[in-house]
Structure formats: structure tokens, C-alpha cells
Length: 198
Image (cartoon, rainbow, N blue to C red; front, side, top):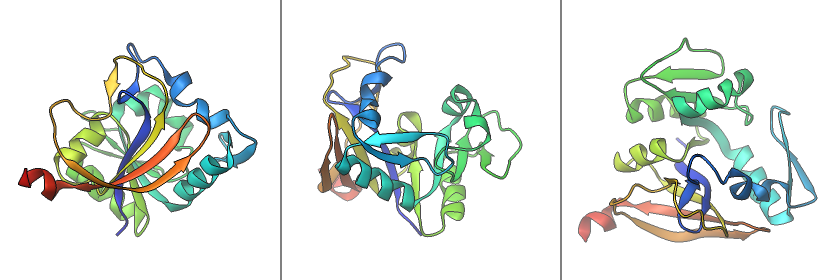
């Protein structure tokens, strides 16, 4: 079974979006700062990246097996037109389930069920968790193996934090550090035991 990770493009002060859902142009500017083209598997989008970011994203795409997202993101993107751009099965955690499709499963039993369904679809590949509430629920439940941060040198000053305020746990690493233009890609292992021992 593959690893479960939570990740997002994050500001220096820890936000995945600014006040009133702002700041996305800054957080995702690294998607267009280079000359190396990396197409999304579905062809829905082509990233233009620096060599470091291109290698990082290509490995991410190749290793992806399934995703877990919230209903808010699913609705905001209109279900990505019927399939997530990564081309992997996507589990939507929601209190308002829709009918399952070839590309989407809708679950309402909680984060444990959502991750379990995603792992079945992912087999030995990774399960990625949408940042924000989905990631926070999974971290609280002890389900996350690694944290992947695309750290962007901008201070948003508020908004939606990646980590829940007041929660404590330890990270080991970094397991990898990849420098891009306007972003540093970081991977850490979550060490729940170290937090409990404090």
C-alpha cells in the first residue's frame, strides 16, 4: 500500500489561501516560471516549470494513485469537468454525496473511510490529500505519512492555514529539498510518536 501525504502550495506564514480566498496567483506562480513543459495526464493543462520543479512535479504525477478532496473544492472546480487533471480516481468527502462515477467516489463516513477508499483505488501508489480541512482531519486521525509543502516566498497575512491552530506534532526531515524559481519543494515524515512523548 502506498503512502498517504498531505500537501499544498503554502505561503511563508503557512496559508494555502489568503483572506477571502485570495493569493492563488502568488501561490501558484511557480507553475509558469520556466521553460520545461509538463502536461497534466488528462491534457487539461500544461505546466511551464524550471528544471527542478519539472522533475519534482513529474515524479509526483507518476507516483499518484488517488486523491481525497472536500466537497467545497469539488464544487468550486465543477468536478474538474468530470475528471481530475491528474487522471487519478478522486474521493470526495461530503455530507451531500452524489452518485459514484468512473472517476469519482463520494463518501460521507468520515476521513478514515475516504482514505480507505482512496487506498483501494491507488493500490501501491500514493494517496494525496487536499490541503485545508481534509488534511487537518487526516493528520488528527493519524493517517498521514508525509507532508509535502511547496513553500512560496510570500506572506499572505491571514486566510486558510495549512495546519490547524493549536495542534502539535513533529516532522522528521526534510526528506527532500528541491529548489525552483519562486518555490522550494519540501517533504517531511510525520512523527506522531514524538509529539505524544512531549
